[in-house]
Length: 397
Ligand SMILES: *Cc1c(COP(=O)(O)O)cnc(C)c1O
Image 1 (cartoon, rainbow, N blue to C red):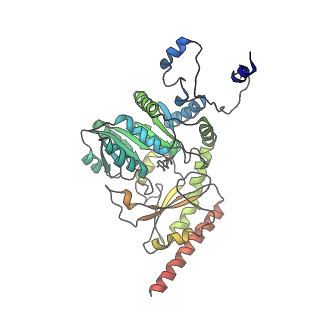
Image 2 (image 1 turned 60 degrees about the vertical axis):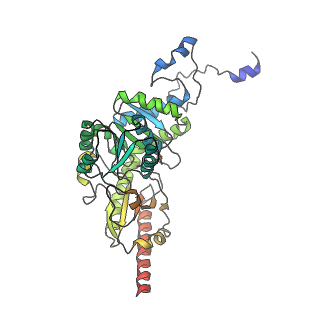
Image 3 (image 1 turned 90 degrees about the vertical axis):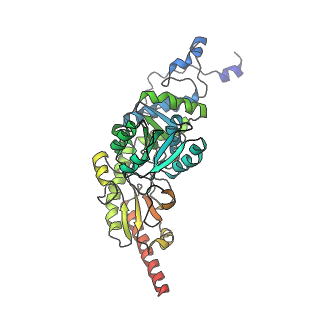
């Protein structure tokens, strides 16, 4: 054999006895077959088998299986981002003339996708008040194919009554999807509460280190595997095994990271609640947070993401106060090791359930820094906010 050929051929390396705890990063576009018949009949391998890199490698299967078990579903698909997961959870089930109902508190890019693209495809789009079963009933039509939930909702944190929503939607012939990014499959199981699909932005807590983007769709019913798989194939949607390896590493510590964030958040909240500048803390485990009763009934815990609503006189000074932070980084997203804080405008993203408070809310994600440093940083933030309000009052006087 020529050396050039030798360079190309893969030797038959034995893996017997190499019993590692980690899953290797299997890379591959081409999958080879033992004979012509194997190639000819590759379609019979189904969604669990290997036929082409787009449909995954054993590395992908490892993460898919972990998520399928955690979500108590039938199968999991991995996508390049959480937003892609939301899009491809609904796209296979909608065609021109159909109708989709989306929770008014859904992740804003999901609203934009519906308003821009789904409408362009001839799908009717409507938004419903995530806290009102009556509003959902009123807006359901005989052509509603999907009811989209996100619980708790982005930024304003309303918990939804998923079992009741699912019952009503199913009776009307619609499927139910739920974005579970805040809770992660550790703290809420949407499929066990009636949803047909659950999506996760693995970008956040599951990967846990703010260094990649990925999303997942887990289906409850085997019948929904093929429609999603074939649309992903036609659109050419898959993820890199290198990124999957990073998520596999991150998910191993998901349990301790979530528990830690929840514990640190609980320790920080009294300081914020005691400030006369903070009007409300939106966090499902607080009794005055919207949907607390539903959270208590259906959820298994909390994450370290919450939102702060300020008294009106504080709002114009928030930007200045944010600039005083030294530990919290200013940035969107959440669920990494670093604590984050981000001003979130709300009004423009609400149509079914208009937001009556001030437009600006601060969303906070608690990371893994020492609690004393976080407390000192929040103290600094509140002191600057108080001082700025004082200056403004004196100037007006
Ligand atoms: C971040 C986020 C997404 C999107 O995830 P990406 O991976 O950033 O696309 C979807 N839903 C919710 C609730 C999110 O917070």
